[in-house]
Structures are given as structure tokens and as C-alpha cells.
Length: 299
Image (cartoon, rainbow, N blue to C red; front, top):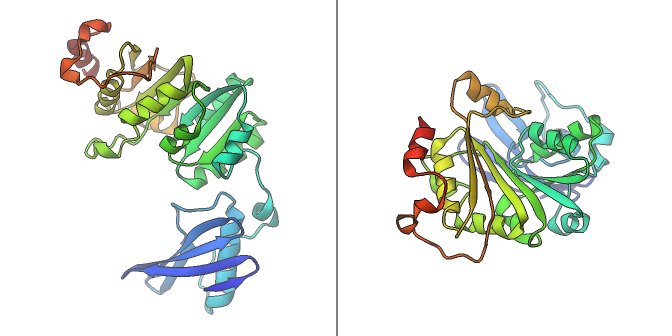
């Protein structure tokens, strides 16, 4: 272990090509990555664990450089003091802080990425709190900066698995849940955020007229999600294909250029106290479309 100026390098893990240094700067922890290069080593922040305050990473790299690097071929960071200690009000560090700040109408966006849709919803619904949940820290920092620059104040962002977030929210406290262009995991469906437990949590936290909205380019994901919600007694659905929305994400722009189909699934009228019907026992006459209709949607 090595420490200096609030920076701690606590332990190291490595294989033949890459080493990871577990690093703490005040309340944040992340990895520095050391990778062999042709003429030496490249030292940078691990992209999956970057701290929400990017200045902490810059400070850690500076301390590492001063303590362990004699010959520097090139460096690509600039230390800015305001990036180190300035805490944005848009990012919450834990569930306790989050719950203390939730009030009024709430929309949730799962995996907000670049933040285009999240910021659009915030501007269109100034009296609604838009809660964004994302796994990757850099996305939180980027969207917080955009919100500040655009004078958007009705958002909260948290780094978490969406399923954990839903589990701590009060019942019937959320108006809408958006899941736009999730990783489809068509070859590994067990890794999808969607599942029976997730759907039950959506039903629990959504208000009486609350709605879940999926938008995806994967028909397999669309159909899989529909199957999960069909286990509820009397859900209502709205299905759309290639609908143009007021705002388009960078992924949607990419898929449209490739002329891929875009599918929307809206679900509401939940009853979380439901039986887990098997799909082969479910009577499709109770909804407004048939399996043949679904095949037409795919085409």
C-alpha cells in the first residue's frame, strides 16, 4: 500500500498483459490500469470503474506519476482543482441520499447513456423528477455536466443496477419507467435486465396508471419482454413499429442508418399479486392481438 495527499494505492492484481491497481481518493474507489506497450507501459483509468468526479482520477494519475514513473514519454491529463472537489447536486452517492431527495412525480430511465432522452424528458416535464440509473460512472458525469450547461434542474442520477434501485423504492411511487435500447443479449438472455422478478418490481413501484416503456431494435428482446409481462392477469399493451419519437438516441440514429426495425412496447394496468402462468397455458384471446400479429410485427 502507498498513500499521499488523500490518494491510496491499496492492492494490485495482474495477468500477463494488464495490471489493475485498486485506488481510493476520499470516498471514491476505482482502478488504475497498467498495460504493456511497445516502448514501456500505458497507465490510465479503468473505463468500467471511473469515478464520478474525474478530477480524482487525474489526481491519482498525478500522484502515481510522481511516485513511480521516472521517464514519461507522453501524458494526457490536466489537473483542474474544481474538478476534484466540486460535487454536483445531480449525482447521488447511495440509496439513503437518493430516498431522502425523492418527492412528487417520478420518471425513471434505466441505462440513460448519453442522456439525450433523459434530458428531453426533464425539459418537457419540468414538474417531474427524472431519475436516471446507469452502471457506468462516466455517463453520470457527462449527463450531469450537460444538465448544468442546459439549466436542467429536475434530474437525479445514480450508479446502480436497476434491479437494486427498484427494490428500495416505495410501492406506487413512480409514474413511468423507460428502458430504451438495452443491450439485447440475444445469445445470453439470462444477462438481460428484464425478467419475472424485474417485471414484478416494475408493477410494485408504478402508480395505478403508471407505465413501462421499452424501445429496442431487437425483436427477440421485444418478444421476450412481452412474454414476461403476459404472466400478469390483465395487463394492457401498446405495440408500435418504426415509430418516430421527438428525440432520437445515438444508438437509434445508428440503427436507422442501417435500416433496422425499431420496436416499442408500452405496458400498464399491472397487478403485482398475480399467478405465474406458463405461456402455453395463457389464453391469447384475452389480449388484443394474436401470435400471428406478432409475426407480422417482426416482418
